[in-house]
Image (spheres, rainbow, N blue to C red):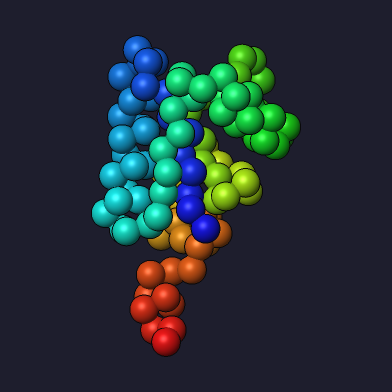
Length: 107
């Protein structure tokens, strides 16, 4: 599966841009197959992202902000949850992926 990271290129908030870059860099550094989906370029993709975030993960007010991560069509989480998983070294299970070590050991 490919991890899809929903981002927004036209947001003017530097904090969000840094979070998006952090996720993309981490995935690239760990050679995790990923696809960046820019929701500012596609209304269809933006609506798909909003529709597929579980209700309990939606913000109290407004729309969910990027980055949002999915493994295929399965929702993984937002940046805060991703950051927590990095700190606890559980990113691969968090993103529903086999660990790099396990995949190297398989024939």
